[in-house]
Image (cartoon, protein in one colour):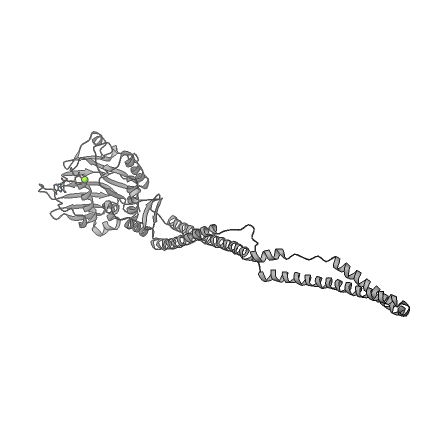
Length: 440
Ligand SMILES: Nc1ncnc2c1ncn2[C@@H]1O[C@H](COP(=O)(O)OP(=O)(O)O)[C@@H](O)[C@H]1O
Ligand SMILES: [Mg+2]
């Protein structure tokens, strides 16, 4: 179903208005211009009152000095005629077949915020975000993802601090190039020393044996000398002694050869090592500590990286959730409960962006409502107005706005409660045609 627009309106004796007639453009901006206090806003107030119900009734609705009660007559694009007239300004809604209807029917296609855009624009960041989330229906899911993101972020913050500390600690640890990679054992060194001493003892015993045999030989030699004097009688004994001596000679040669090849191994280095063992082990421990600290730091860093990946995942899920949602406007999102457009919060958006964002959101609240009222557009420069007008045209939306100006951008000028006749306006019949759709 086509959304509903305002085809024409006639107002008499409401607030500052004496008599105003207007046929707004079907899409784009229709600007009501004029100086201050001439009745521009009174036009918007009249439309809101006619279409929005008694909540929108102005405090002092009847124009002071008028003996005739207010009279509002609005024709809508769906064929309905909405009127307020008579002593009590009663609402009268007539459908194209002449049948009667009322506020309930109007409420079905009229969005209250479209009649009161400042109410949306002045709402808090959170209220704006909630309105958007309500429209696209992903609020709960998004807030869950944001909670998860916050939790992971805080966890990563802690891990990151620990990782930095551990890394710093690892870097501060001493390192000794000359230390062995493993701890030195004192008992092993002592065992080695004992082995060498035992071997050396054995060698000593062999040397002692040489000495022993040598002294025995000397005795034998003495005996030989004795016995030689008794040679005759002692030949047999001599032979025996000679044989014994020959045997000993042989032993001596063997023992001497044995002894010749003996080399004592030095225990000096071991002794030095034993002396230095404390120092070496201190260095080995320091190196082991440093390696451990480096491992710790690495582990913490990899935890941090894993959390970063998770946070990225949650953020992607959030983006996807909003991407897949039926957004009223490309570039809208909700970040941490705040409405964002093109990555910027409300206060950073340009004036036209704020208008586009509000209009797009308000429009989606009730897609059947094809128009929106806007007061005080004088803060917009011409380029901003043009941008906004183009966007409205593309969206097929109608905006009726006021602006303190008498420039060409205005569709009508109001002065002292009347529409001022403008040459271009009277030429073209429809007041809005000098303000071509698409131009603004
Ligand atoms: N019921 C009324 N009768 C006559 N004048 C009114 C009434 N209500 C408000 N005004 C006057 O209308 C002027 C504001 O009208 P408004 O439509 O807001 O003007 P504009 O938007 O062009 O500045 C003020 O001067 C105010 O005193
Ligand atoms: Mg005003």
